[in-house]
Amino acid sequence: KVKGRLTGWVGYTLSWTWRQFKNLNDGLKYPSRNDRRHDLSVVANYELNKKWKLSSVFVYGTGAAISVPERFYLVGGVLTQEYSRINAYRMAAYHRIDIAATYTPKRKENSKFNSNWVFSIYNLYSRQNPYFIYYDQEGSAATGDLKVSAKQVSLFPIIPSVTWNLKF
Image 1: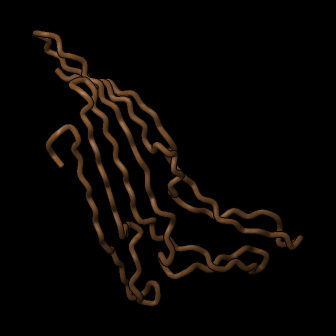
Image 2: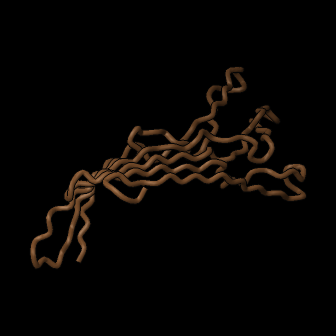
Image 3: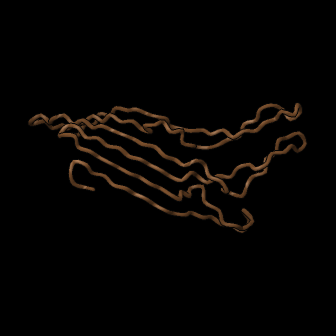
C-alpha cells in the first residue's frame, strides 16, 4: 500500500540453492549454506502527524543448512566425530521485529538545514537467532562421565538506538 497515512509492503521469496560435486556427499546434491528456502518481510509505516512517523518490520527466514556430528566415539583416547551428510540439518528459523519512531521538527524559514530524530529498537523481542552451533565437552572418558552438548551462539539481542539525521 503506497497511499494514505498507513503504508507498507509484504515481500516473500521461495527459493532453493543446491550444490553437487562428484567427490562430495556420495555425489548427492545438498543445500548450500546460503539456501534460505523461505524469506518473508512485512513492513508497515504510519504517519501520526506532520512531525511523527512510526514504522515496523517483521523479518523471517528459514534456518541455515548445517552439517552436524551424528556420532561421537573414542579412537586412541581422542574424541572423534562422525558427521551427517553435508548440510542435512537446519538451524532454527531466523525472525525478529524492528520498530522506529521518527520525529521531524518544523523546518525554520530560510534554513539550509533539515533534520530528524529516529528512535528505534532492533530485535524488539530479543530473539536469540542462531549464528552458529558448536559442541562442548564435559567430564572425561576415563571416568565414564563424558558428555557432549550442542551450544548455540547468537548475536544482536535487543538493541535500542537514537539517530540524528542532518541534511544540508
